[in-house]
Length: 91
Image 1 (cartoon, rainbow, N blue to C red):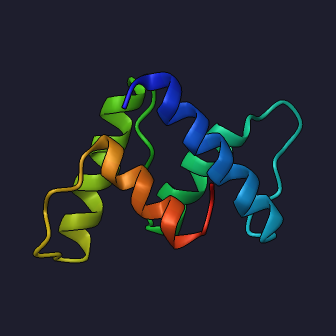
Image 2: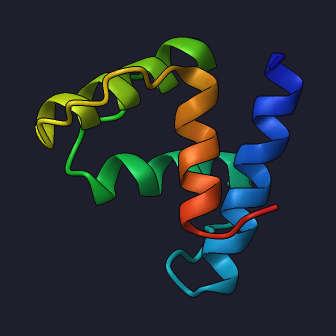
């Protein structure tokens, strides 16, 4: 998946989180940023600053695998987005 597709999926996830009233976007914040902030805070992780989207998503995936001691450790940038989109039924 290219970066544009990732951003679009994250935006859709942010919109869905807003529909579910799990987040309230602040003025000037994008739904993409809101989604990432929610995912990191939901799993009690610190979101890395100044990193590319790919690095940010990989760090989220790695932290979730380690924190929850998952045996399934094949999360990558794309699969972590797909996982959360399915979880929250974002399209």
